Image (cartoon, rainbow, N blue to C red; front, side, top):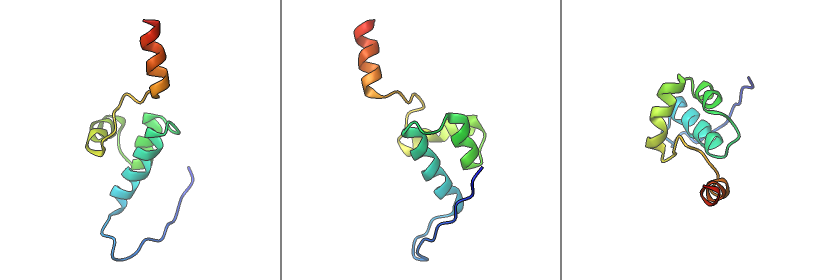
Length: 75
């Protein structure tokens, strides 16, 4: 796994866990990483990560809208 170092202003009150969650939830939402991969980035179990997704406004069911529309029309 790669390690990323970023510089943030001292005035920004955010801890490492929050930053890891923000990055991992964004990557999950964009479909770049699986649930298991994003949980690993955040340093959490898959179950814990899945339970926290909702608090970040992200559904665990991460389907692109176009795929959902196609599935509905094929039903």
